[in-house]
Length: 128
Image (cartoon, rainbow, N blue to C red):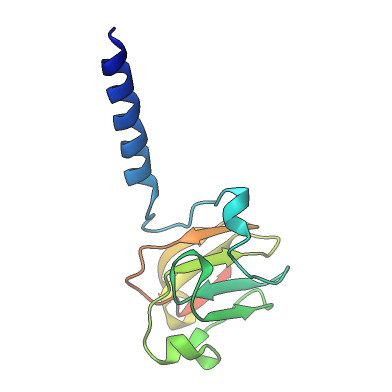
C-alpha cells in the first residue's frame, strides 16, 4: 500500500474518532488525565458547569442526591444549560432534565466527567 494511502487512512481514522467522541449525548465520557485538571471539583462532590471543559460557573453538591438543583445553583436559576460535569464521588451518578428524578438523560461513573451535549439543564441527580 503506498505511503500516502496509509497516511490518508490514518488521518481519516483520527478525524472519525474525534468526531464521534467530542460530544456525548447522554453520558459524560471520562477525560484524559490532563483534562481532569480543568475541572475544579472538590473530592466527594458532584459538579456541574455552565461552560465546556469545566469552565464558567460551577455548582457542586456533597449530598448523594438532589431533587431540585435550581434550589442552590445560580446558573440553573438563570435558565442556562449544563455544558460539562465532573463526578468526584465514589459512586455513579445519574442525572435528569426534570426535578424529582424525572426524564433521565445520562449517568457518569465515579471520578469521571466531561462535556455534555449542552442543550439541557440537569435539574436533579442521584446515585445509580
